[in-house]
Image (cartoon, rainbow, N blue to C red; front, top):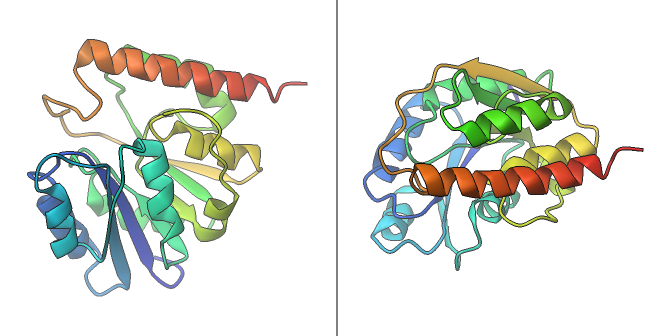
Length: 218
């Protein structure tokens, strides 16, 4: 790994079952290396926030800001030069964090992309936006950022499930790398809803991202 340490940021909403396992696994992977874990809880209705207060290094509670804005909040309070964002649902393998950080030696942002995209809306995003963004998994929130990139990120859209974080970095000319991995099975009740609801919400995010991307065309 490179640089002075790693800040790991996750956002949560009703993740009381998964958050302790995630934190323990991140601690195990980064044992012996300077790191911090930051949890931004988006007003969970269960004990997620209390768990974050007890187990994370920094914990914040917001009033339903949405995933993208919560991620940026956590990223901006990070103290280390390398910042890794990761989902709390255990679908992103913490064992890959050292590799993502290592790749920051060559890139400003590294996107950990799933080898298989289960939703039609995710595959559409890859076809429409993947070439411009330089990644095959637009809605992956398993990413590594150099700290100075975060200061330049501007959010102008509504909820994009993390997509605008990457788009803003690309707009500013930062170098984007990609690490492709085989994902574990998706959980039965994802955070953004069931199959129909999730695809509709992601399609709306694709439209927002596409409008911002096409506005850059001469």
